[in-house]
Image (tube, helix red, strand yellow):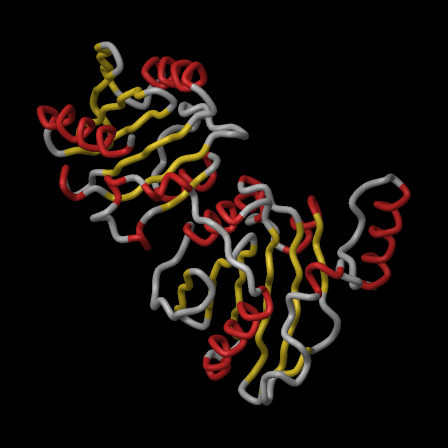
Amino acid sequence: MYLYRTALICLLGLWLGLAGCPSSSPPPGLERLLPPAGILKGVEAAGKPMVYVGPQLFDYMNGGADLYYEYGFEQALVQRYKTPQGGITAEIYQMPSAADAYGIFSTDRTGDHPAIGQAAALKFGLLTFWQDRYFVRLFADKSTAASGLTSLGRAVAATIGTTGPAPAMLAAKSLAAIPADTILYFKGPVALNNVYFLSHDNVLSLQPGVSGITFAYPAAGEEARIIMVQYPDTQAAETAFDRLCAATAFKQAQVAGPVCSGQTRNGHGGARLQADRIALILDAAQAGALATHLNQITGAAT
């Protein structure tokens, strides 16, 4: 009954001109990224790979696809493997650029950091890494199969072969002392709200062409956080700054030229407009130090 219902839904989707069902015949570009058969002893493909293109990602991950779409998700390949210790699922996500692949990776990279791809994270039977425009997830069905994740991950990374640049914002001098695995690169409110809920409204005017980074900033207090947003031009940044200062992100907000400040949920906060960027500090311990911290952040970012 399930197979009949699935087939009926697929046929209906095709008849209506919708996305239809995932393809079992992946485009050569993605299939080429799978390690050749027999390259890993004891690791065998279980069935054919499946590809999810555009809106089809909702069919694969119900509830988590919105995050990938913020980074411009294009298509994904999913291949199951069997090993003597248990099953492993490999997911390869193709993004528009290396920066977008890095962004997805940066949403959760806690754990150990093996030398796989351009950066990797390993924890609890899950290995993730980014390389060039691809974000890769490998997860084991059982803890006994986790030992095969790194070898399979290295094989996938070797098959990808190429590398790509990380987001340009990461080159800011102000990040020199910030642990790299604590920095989130975001392109929309879904990713940002996952680490810091700023508002139900899009108070930073996040849209295509806008990106940012955020990280904890203990120098300003235990709960303090920095958000830096890059806009396409100065006019877009000025419009976003005016909207931010008029919103409810800061209580009792006061505006003085390119700076607005006020109270936040857990302390004090402020925002500084500088050319095509806005820098925010949130939940700082002392209101009197806001200007100093904002000067340090924006002064080093230019």
